[in-house]
Image 1 (tube, rainbow, N blue to C red):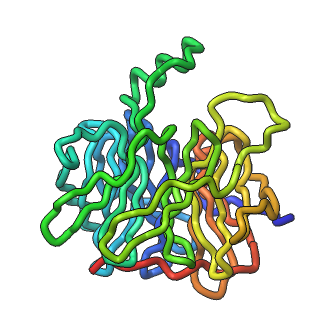
Image 2: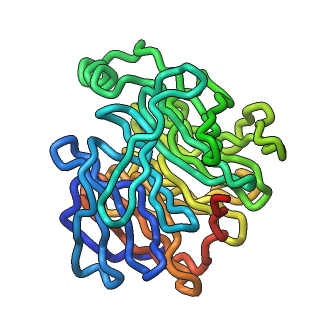
Length: 295
């Protein structure tokens, strides 16, 4: 079992960790009152705010060091953010379908951007959960976005709260669905289309109390293993290439939201923990699979 340390604290509902070229970290802070993108210094000792958006969620960086952000509110959209502090809303719908809750992003083997939409209107969904209702309709979706012309393709829908995205060592697309607790696999085709949705792994510890628990963000090791944040269960589930559970890495809160690998050679993962307001570092002895670049 790994032991973790706090790399940076005092964050407001952190998510979307991105390792930048100078070994600093980009993170989003999701509280609607804060709602901004921040940069944490390489040693973790300081933080600066880049820009306030609304309620940013998942984030990736392209080869030009531009940040792409899944914005879940004000309005639900895809944002392009420069490190100088400018932010631009690029898309609010895909194939004529309005975005409801953009959640996470990943670049594919084709250089296109793949985006999850959890398929709920956030405020109404949280109200239903607070009231104990389990009948709220969820229509999670997956989109492909061609950044050369910003054209979009709806790849799948009807997913139970689509959340984290990552491409595996096999070039397949993997997506967590929080409401089911499962990690799904999609065969990726060279034209950008996907094969049928396949159940790949169960991320949830079913011995614990049931509720809205399941996978959130994830990262892939160079060994092909998946490191998946399991929100409301306080751990990162490590899943091997066959879909079997290897271990559960405990974190310092109930709500880990995302995972990213540290600098090459470090063998570390970094985990954002929403309720603790921290970016944690855990040594796992494996480097990350190189992230796919944009075109």
